[in-house]
Image (cartoon, rainbow, N blue to C red; front, side, top):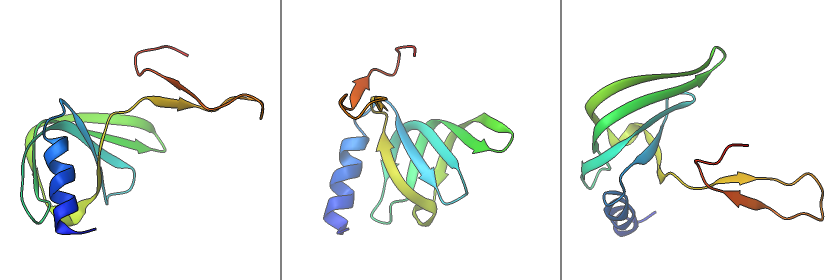
Amino acid sequence: MSQHTISRTLSKAILKPEIRIKLKIWNTFLTGKLIKFDNYMNLIVKDAKEVYFGRGGKRSKDLGTVMIRGASVIYVGQDREKLIFAGTPEEKLMHREESEEV
């Protein structure tokens, strides 16, 4: 991925109220508001929350404002709609909003 593409993607992410960052640590994500970034993809995230999915279940911890080194980031994404896969092949992939209950 070119430097221009990374910069454009992070410029869009900085406008979002919350982003999700996948870290190289196994099954660990950070969520929060992206405040600043640089050309090396070092990130400063405000109101960061660490979310870990492990054998003991899902655990989370509030971290506050953190700086994340670009080398430890796998991807930066935004919260999207959850996807529901239908039970039969005739039914198509359906979308639902995050707030809806199953």
